[in-house]
Amino acid sequence: MPGVRGPSEYSKEPPRHPSLKINAKAPFNAEPPRSALASSYITPVDMFYKRNHGPIPVVDDIEKYHVSIHGLVESPKQLSMAEIRKLPKYNVTATLQCAGNRRTAMSKTRTVKGVGWDIAAVGNATWGGAKLSDVLELVGICKLTAATQLGGKHVEFISVDMCKEESGGPYKASIPLSQATNPEADVLLAYEMNGEILNRDHGYPLRVVVPGVIGARSVKWLDSISVNAKECQDYKMFPPTVNWDNIDWSTRRPQMDFPVQCAICSLEDVAVVKERRITISGYAVSGGGRGIERVDISVDGGKTWMEASKYQKSGMQYIADDLNSDKWAWVLFKAEVDIPDNAEIIAKALHFKLHENLSQLAWIDTKVFETPINVESTGFLGIFLVLQQVDSAANVQPENVEVIWNLRGILNTSWHRIRVLNASQVALSNL
Image (tube, rainbow, N blue to C red):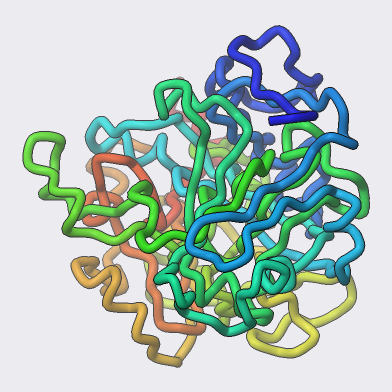
C-alpha cells in the first residue's frame, strides 16, 4: 500500500531486547523471561511478546499511508492517520495473549502445529487510539449495529505484512460487527502503546486492539477493513479426538474470548530452592472482560488452601468487576508459602457466577484434584506446584492438558504445574 510495504525478506528487522527468548527467528517470534513478566502490571514495550507472521513492514512515507474501509457498506472510505487522530482518543488498558500461549507444554502430550511458546506469550499494556465504533460511523454504520443493510455481519482486518502461513498473502482476522460497533467493547484502532507511538514490532503506524479475545484478532500494520457477510475461518479449537485426517473445519466457529488462564512466573518448571518459605507470584486473566474472583494456593495437595493476594494498580485493592478495576487487564497475584517435603502444591482461583460461555468448553473435566501424588514412588525428591483458577463467569481451568489437547495447540489453560526441589534434599540424593 502507499507509504507502507511488507518486505518479502528479513533484512530490515528492528532491534530487539537481548533477553527475549527467541522461539522462531524468521518470522521473529519471542517472549520475555517468565521472571520478568509479572514484575510490572504494565508490561514494558521491549518485554512485550513478539508475534509475527512474516517480515516486519516498513514505513516509507507516513503521509501517504491510509486505511481503506470497504465491503458491505454504503459509503466506502479511505482514512489517513491525520483523520484517525482527529477522532476522540481513548486509552484502554488491556492484556493481549497469543492463542498459542503455553503451547510447548501441550506439545509434550502429543505433537501440535505452531510456534512453541512457554507461559509468556502474554502482556498488559495501555493502548491509545480511536474506537472502531467511531470509525465505522464514518462509513454509515451506526453504533450497536449487528448487520448492515447490505448484509455485512463481520468486520475483517487485513494487514500489510506478507504472511508465511498465508502463502505470502496478507494476515487477516475478523470479529462480529456487533462487537465492532459496541463502544463498551473498547475495540481500538491504536497508534500508541504505553503512552508512546507504536514501534514497528507492535504494529506501527496503526493496529487493531480487541480486548478480551485471543491476540490473533488484534491485527497489526492495518491495511484495510472489510465488512463481510461471513467470518474469517482461522483459529478454532477442536476436541482431542480430532486430528489432521478427520478434521472438519465447518464444525467449529472461530475462537473469540480466551478462557480463564493463569501461570506462575516466579519459578521455572523445575526449580531448586534453598529456603523453606518462598514467594509465589504470577498472573491470572480471563477473556470477555470477566474478573478474577480468587487465586488460592495449596501446599498439601488440596487438603487446605490459602488465598493469594491480587492486585493491578499499586496501592489499590483489586475487586473483580469493580469500576476501579481494569476489566480487560490481567491480575497479578502473590503468596508466601512454607514448602513441605514430598507434597503437591496447587493454586486455583474461584468465583461463583454461572455464564453461558461455559458451554464452549463442555468436554473439559473441571473437578478439583485433591489427592497428593506419591512422590517417593516416582523417585523424585521435591514438590509439585500447581496453579488453577476460576473466573467470574464460572470458566474453570482443567486439571490436565490431555483433556484440552488440540491439533493446533491453542488455549492451553490447564493447571500450571511447577516441580520444586529443596536444595538440601538434592544434595542428599546425590550422596
